[in-house]
Length: 407
Image (cartoon, rainbow, N blue to C red; front, side):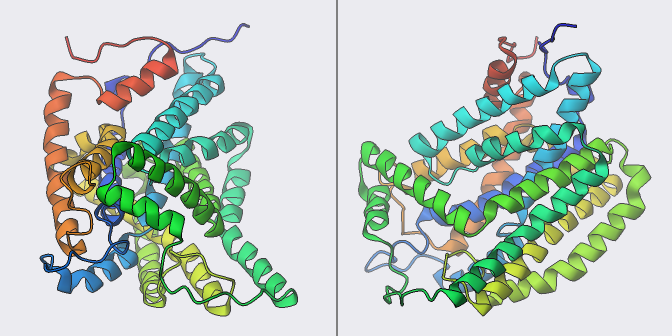
């Protein structure tokens, strides 16, 4: 039988609203983390002669972000990516299409969007990571649930195992003492920061390339990638089990995940935030091992607890929760819009507020910006079938130009 390629995306009637609500909230959580980079927090001192509003609360604000947000919503979005993969494979296969081939093209489209985003707009892109790691999901299409869950647990635990091995290795092979550079950035990164603050667009693009490569190394050293893939696999398992298609039948499971995740995850995440988190690569140490262990348990636990709690709230307050669904239906567009707005507001090529806004004030602005995105998304989807970025992604995936506007 010849391979058949799908020529149409998922119909609106087939969407699972709770997934759109979860994506919408995840987009907000990611913005709360990314805004630190947009405003240059920690990169540049406050402008001389002026004190940004709310700066006295920045220490507490940074701690709360580290405690409750940092890593958790990327984990949640990774989980949802895995769910989306399962749903995509199920529906395409049910229609007789070559789902795997179609998914590969979908990942290629996401990779292209991510590369454009990271180089031409903002360096903190996550799409390229998702696209590249997403190819690792394909071999699991034919594996049974037990092997999927076992692999997920292995990948989620692997950062601790790898760190322990590196720690033992450095104990056997002493590392030369490092010079005390404090919190100063390497010159090449410091130069890139200056281009964000005051440079031309060409200099911003150069800075994006430098920071994109630095982020790749940083994420590798911090073992970010295994955690992403582990959450991909957990999401794939949950999606294949049709958990989100019939939430009412899984209330007991959702309550258990919510309680265990919050009771176990919150104290560990608090301890990890007090330890300083693992945002900066450092030579292996006992304190680093504790931080890595705490983060490897607390971050996925809280991400799953957040997801389960939101699902329970969705069942009880469905009409209210659905107000957030449009933002999730346009999650890719809204994620990219964050970067465009961040560059336009804070970089030197825009309004020039880089290093001149307190973290506290910026975080408050994130909630206002998200409320605006919810309203704009709702208005846009009243006249359009897809968000602009979603439409472009589907067009690339299916090699067919779809109508963007209704009617």
